[in-house]
Image (cartoon, rainbow over all chains, first blue to last red; front, side):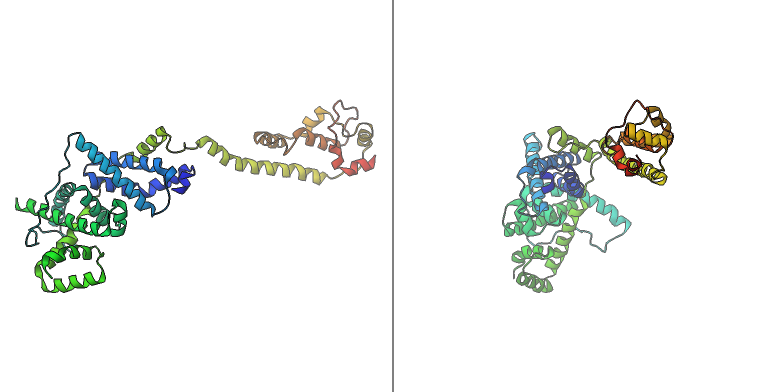
Length: 185
Length: 199
């Protein structure tokens, strides 16, 4: 990024090559839609390039990149919402007994039926993920999807580590609750 | 500890983010609570689920991003490939030119300072370094011309002056005419002290 700031196009091309898959994945997980993900991902790289003159290496580049990515997708989702498409917020329906009537595949559960079921489950999971509150979804995606630590997620979201811990726990509960509703229906 | 109070810690344990004390408390609770063991397994599975939502890089994504960046002037323009190609082509051309120089000078070295011919001595005494243009062109082989053309391509006149060297070669050629209409540029024959000593 520092080389790009000094005018090296090759540096930005290298940066793009290294990170574009992660950016597209993040945008996909946050928006849940391929067209929205592409729009958001393009915008993320535009913002990264525009921000180069003011970039300061005070944190890991990826942490800074995800900060840009999260803000960009958040703005994108807000714009979409203003255009009429609602971003649904799931009610936090915690079960009293803490056990959800859903069978989720474990690492040892591999057979053809399981694979088909997993494909269906993945689609339901994607839908449920899109219904999480944005802050919960971002925390959960950054930690479980992109491998950022709670500390790094806290930096990206601008919240405390404890807040990240709570958001990720709540995201898990909401996802399990939603997937259980699908199974019960 | 109550199940409701420990669930958040179970989630942190699944992510390897619990403190040592918290992790110990979770292990102790799970050892005695079947429901929370099921929940712990579900929490792991739902954490893995997010990695199944991968998406794919759209077609021509790179081209689209760079087109937008270039249209905004957000990145420097791509260097022209022609200039890059010329830079690479210059390497073998320079090598060929170097070889040409070597061949020309070594040919002269092989000839060496020839014994003075009366005609040559006359040239030196009457008009130092004189030679004829006809003689120049006759002395250049097609290979020499090719080498000189390469030098012209490199546009480096300081590296080698074709006419001067050709004239120098002619000075050494026996039987050259003394009444040449084109005297050489000054100083060239200074490089061959043997000629001067003859006069």
